[in-house]
Image 1 (cartoon, rainbow, N blue to C red):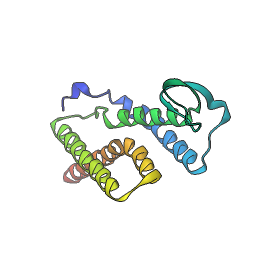
Image 2 (image 1 turned 90 degrees about the vertical axis):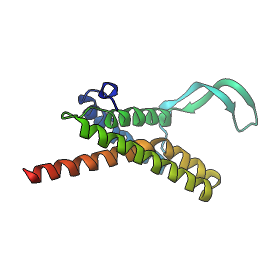
Image 3 (image 1 turned 135 degrees about the horizontal axis):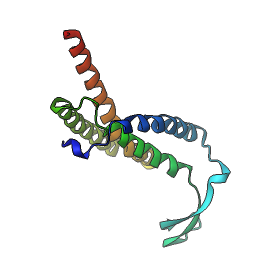
Image 4 (image 1 turned 180 degrees about the vertical axis):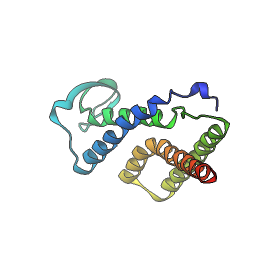
Length: 158
């Protein structure tokens, strides 16, 4: 993976500052079904299908945009955390980054295949919602654990 495609290392800190509160607020809204009224606004939508059995290709609908805001913040901040250059970026870290990405992809799609076989109806919808974030979260965890163990082993040898 060429490092020219990575963000500058300072973006990792920015990503963490945005990611942690976004995930906490996202889980809070999910658990408590909280939607602040001031975020209820008319929005343009594609493939509009409302509960009155009125279907159209496009249209304006009333929607609470909190979920959309949080989803975008989580994705962008996760990308910043996952794909920011390390201060000591070298070939070994690039190799760990690539291996972690491949590992996260395998696990992400393994979970998805199991979900196709074992989860149905509205529960499957929730699996798909969380699956949007799974590959990035798995990558971040795997990559940082590998970096931590590498740096721990390196400091132990010194």
